[in-house]
Amino acid sequence: MKVVEQIKKPVHDEMELFEKKFYESMSSKVALLNRITYYIVNRKGKQMRPMFVFLVAKMVSNGQVNERTYRGASVIELIHTATLVHDDVVDDSNRRRGFFSINALWKNKIAVLVGDYLLSKGLLLSIDYGDFDLLKIISVAVREMSEGELLQIEKARRLDITEEVYYDIIRQKTATLIAACCSLGACSVKPDSGEVETMRKFGELIGMAFQIKDDLFDYTDGPIGKPTGIDIKEQKMTLPLIYTLNNCDQKDKNWLINSVKNHNKDKKRVKEVINFVKNNGGLEYAEKKMKEFQQQALSLIKNYPNSEYKDALELMVSYVIDRKK
Image (spheres, rainbow, N blue to C red):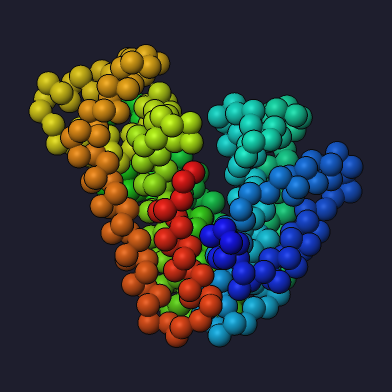
């Protein structure tokens, strides 16, 4: 059994029902919109985010979920899908999970409007049922994701980014959405409890580890058998590079900055940068940090009673840093 299927097993029935509810939550009177949302639903990814919502809800409440849990999962998936649709426009990307992106098939204007529609549907789903506590969690996540992206753009122009700023960027850009999933799960079944914040922190730590793992893919042999170097080509400052820049002499530092700034399209030079980072402990340092975040996350759930939901969440935390893509 694949790891993802193993993680999904304790919430398999909930995920089946969720998919129906999620599709219903997108419906519109506009035929074009329904065609596009049908296309989106049929090209779904692993659905890790709703899984987090259900697993956390069941772990903290001895296996109970309710209608709020389903709405929380739908809202997070609507918002997440909206951000992906908008991201593809921003990045001018034609593919998403191996399929054509919305903007590739229907052009940018429609893609932006579809993203806006999904965002408003997500927010309305919470308002219609008076789930203002869930709405607040989601709204904070959307604000932080936007700030994180903008912070990254602002800092990317100057390559003197510190490790602290890097953590701020990934905390907002990536970790905040997984944090929202986990706090939504807890909040749906145990509103106003301290567990809502504990689970938010749990999700945030997983998100941090997840992003560092993504950074490492740039330097390690990918599915095609060689490092991609895509982050370097895009002048993205990732943890292995930041560590190396902060721990080498001025001459090497100048060479690295010059390479990333002015020679990022030169394949040979990118390869030299990858090798330099590897040989100067950049990868080992990033892996060490990733494992620290993973261990901190696991420590937050260790006192919960043993259950298949807790097991699945522990498996999820391991999967985040052991995955191959």
